[in-house]
Length: 172
Image 1: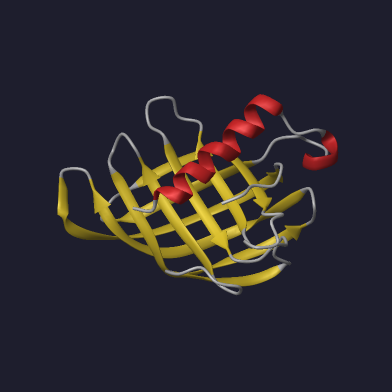
Image 2: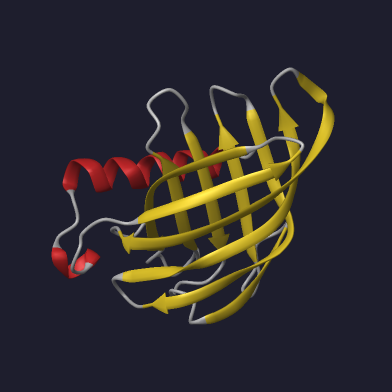
């Protein structure tokens, strides 16, 4: 598991929660949301808050979309990463198991259930892309491990919709 991504997500959420995002950053509603269904070797449905940011550091490029559940009993997160300093445009973008300038990488984790899944293949369809909003849908296949049997690799399909709001830029 790559803890760099988890720490980045926690920092983004902390900044968004404690410092807030004014209307200039987030747009009209000030909140982002998502809904996800996971099927296959495990089954889950959850929803929550959606945020995105771009890295402003010239030496390190990055776009990140973070989906965190609103459930109190289980902390769930889906993270999408793309190695560009701009918000991706409208259209269909591939999801793979390694991030680069044209391919999203996705990671799903649930701390209390000890679930960790990495993307293998799929697509993200972006319907809104602006400085304030990033919205669309995604569908991808992932492999990983889950509580009770960390020796067995499991396969899942993760589908969802999102409408994310911008938070201040991040640094790796």
